[in-house]
Image (cartoon, rainbow, N blue to C red; front, side):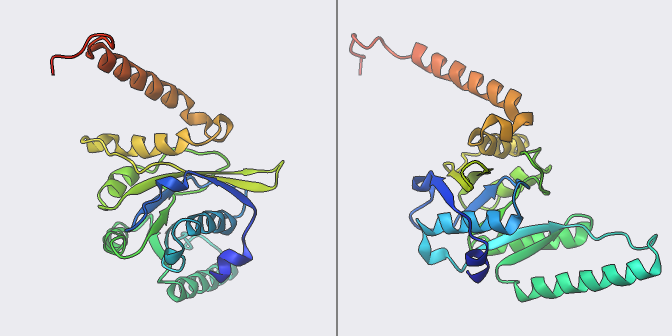
Amino acid sequence: MPLSAQNRDNYVVRGLENIPEQGLFTLAVNHTMRRWTPRLLAAVHYATMEKRPELARDWIVIVGYREADLSKRKRPIRWLMLRIRRLHTWIYRRWSFNALRLPMDNQRAGLQALRQWKIRAQKQPTIVFPEGRGAKTFEQVRPGAGRFLAGLNVPVLPVSIWWEADHNRWQVVFGPPVTWSPDSRLHDLQIGLEIAYGLPPEEAPTWQNALKAWEEAYQDDQTAEEADLPPSNVPSST
């Protein structure tokens, strides 16, 4: 709470009606680097409090990280980086209730952290960046991210967020919970499309072709469904 208050910017929020009235859920957020990450998180945090203030202190942020290879560094640099690493470890231990570190280059430790996340997702709401790392625009989802989110057994809401420099504020859009496809191979694509759908085209340029194909497929499905319906001026047999 103090960290969010310290880093809070102005924001405009839409889609609060998509946040469940009760129970736990996970937010899958695009990781824009147009603003310092704690400010992005503060905007999302404050926006959720408008609907679910009772969860304000319970959030877990999933933090991915990679350990730098120090073997080729000069001794003074190695010494400094080791001290920084120890400081980061101390900070995350202190914040262990609200932050869960997910190592990207250690498969065994990564699996342990994923299991811990799945357990804690049943007890606390979660915020995660499916891209795995930040960028100026929304990029590809990290392989396996959507499949894992689908297996959390809690509603997963896509959150589209971007910084409006002209208005000096965030735009935060909560989408409806994802209805996962029976085919788990599509889950990464699903979560990416759902996030990109809420963003302006310039904030998700690499997703525009996929969004267009998605919308065309949806329209084709709607047309096929309408073709199976009886004419509106003729009562159906039932």
